Image (cartoon, rainbow, N blue to C red; front, side, top):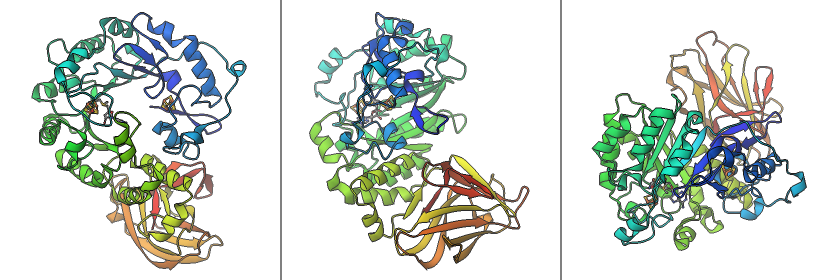
Length: 506
Ligand SMILES: C[S@@+](CC[C@H](N)C(=O)[O-])C[C@H]1O[C@@H](n2cnc3c(N)ncnc32)[C@H](O)[C@@H]1O
Ligand code: SF4
Ligand code: SF4
C-alpha cells in the first residue's frame, strides 16, 4: 500500500487513486481490505475505475471518511498511520459523524492504478484456523468447488498491466494447483507481453509445494521481485497448530533452496511472514533467527484480522485488554529484533493499544526493559553530526532512572574516526551525563547500544539527548537515522524539524 504526503502534512492512504484488488470471482475494489465495488467479468476496467461507486469512495476519502467509504477499521495501514484514532480491536474509536451525500464530490479521475492485489485461485490444501480458505477436510470436494480467475477477467486486465508497478499475488495456495493449465502461467505470459519493464511481482505462498520446478519458473521471470513465505512460527510444536496439514521441514527446505538458487543475493527478495497473535508472539524472535539462517531477507509481522474460526481469533487475538502481559512481552522482544522487518508498525500499534487502555505510564514505570522513549523508524537521515552541527531530541521521563540508549546511525559504510559525544541534559541545558561513542564500532543503519551511567530522572520532566562531534567533518562524520513525526521535533544545528531520531531509551 502506498501513501502520499499532503501539503498540510497529513498522511493519507491513496488506494482509491492508485490501487486495485481483483478477487478470484472477478469482483473488484480499490483495496483488499474494503468491500468489492464492481466486477470485471462483464465490465471493462475503465468503466469500473470511473464508476459512480468508486468516485463516491474518492469523494469520502477527501473528507477523511475512510470507514464510511467501506474501509475496515482494523486496517493496519490506518492503525499505523493514525495511532490515536484507529486503535487495534477498538472499532468504535474509528466512528465519526457521517459525511452527508450532498458534500461528496463526484468526478472522474485521470489517475490509474500502479499497485494490484490479485487472487488467482481460492483452493488451498491446508487448514489454517484463522483463514477463510482453511475450512473443509475433504480436499477433493474442496478442489471441485474451487475457482480460478476466469479468462474474461484476464482479458479485461490487459489494458491495466502497462501502468502496474507492483503486483501482489494471493490465494488460496497457488502451488497446490497442478502445473497443467496453471493460472500463473497465463498471467506471466500476459505480463511478459504487456507489463511495464519495471513491474515488481510479489508471490505469497505457504511454501509447502514450492518445489524446484516452481522455483526455477519464478527465477526465470525477472519481474518476480519477492517471494513471501507465510510460516507464522518455525517452532515445531506451534507450526502444526496453525498451518494444519502443512510440513514445516519441507517448507523451510523450499525456502532455503530458493535462497540458494538466486543468482544475486537480492532478487527475488525472500520474505517470511508471521501472523501475529498469542500463538505466534513468543516465537517471533526464533522465526526471525530461522529466516536469517536460511537466507531470507525480511520478516513481515501481520496483525490478525477477524477471519476463519471465530474461537481461534478470540483466543489468539493479542490486542485484547486481558492480554496486556503478552503484549508487554512482545513489546520487549520487538525492541531487540534487529532483523529487517516491519516491527516499527507493530510497536506503534502496541503502544497505541496499551495507551488506549490508559496503562502506558504504569507498565513503562514498572518494567525497566521497556523503552521509556521509543521511535523505531529510520527512513530519514538527520545530521550530519559535525563541527557545530549538533542533533538534539527531547523526551519526557517515564521512569526515575536512565540506563541505556539504542540509536541508529548512518555511517555511509565507511570507517569514521572522530568520537561522538552523547549528552543528556535537562530542559534548561544542565548537563546530567556525557558518554563517548567510538564511530569505528558503529554499523551502518544498525542499532547501536550505549550503556549510560545510572542517571536519576524526574518523572514527567522533559530532558534532551544531544549528539555532538566537534572534530568530525567532510567525509569523516555520521548522521542519525530518523523519521518524520507529528509530535516531536529534532534540532539539527539551527534547524528545527518535525521529526524524531531512531532511538530507544531504557
Ligand atoms: C490467504 S493467504 C494465501 C497465500 C498462501 N496460502 C499463504 O498462506 O501465504 C495470504 C496471506 O493471508 C494471511 N492470513 C491468513 N489468515 C489471516 C487473517 N485472519 N488475518 C490476516 N492475514 C491472514 C496468510 O498468513 C498469508 O500471509
Ligand atoms: S482499508 Fe486501509 S489500505 Fe484499504 S483503502 Fe482503506 S485505509 Fe487504505
Ligand atoms: S495456507 Fe494460506 S490460504 Fe491456505 S489456509 Fe493457510 S493462510 Fe489460508
